[in-house]
Amino acid sequence: MDYVDGFVVAVPTANKQEYIARATEAASIFKKHGALKTVECWGDDVPEGEITSFPLAVRCRDDETVVFSWILWPSRKVRNAAMEKVMADERFDPERNPFPFDGMRLIYGGFDVIVDA
Image (cartoon, rainbow, N blue to C red; front, side, top):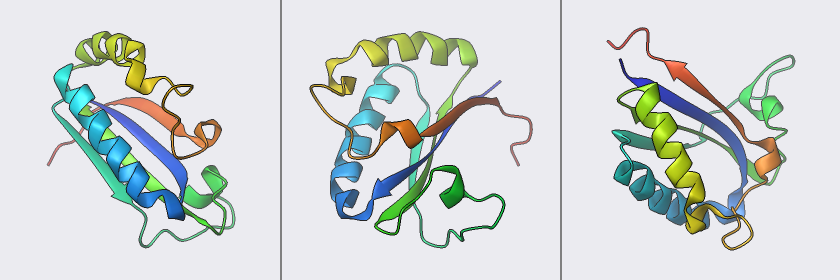
């Protein structure tokens, strides 16, 4: 059964091209280790709610844009094995290669696919 890692983060709007470059590089690394697909979505119509919303969840500032992304894996087992290798890759070391966003406001989780229509 497929497995999905989902992510939501606020990215400084000025860093859009840098984010795209890093996400493209990350996609190739994830795929090298078994990911079936990676998708990155730059916020276009993401309303700020009063109680809950993507912008509220990541404390999105006026000069930032919400990014929603996911990685499709063939299984959680494949994802777990891959993540060990991915996190050991020096390209993911924030000291050597800082992310173009505040990682403290990144929301992520792993999900079993229950409907795929």
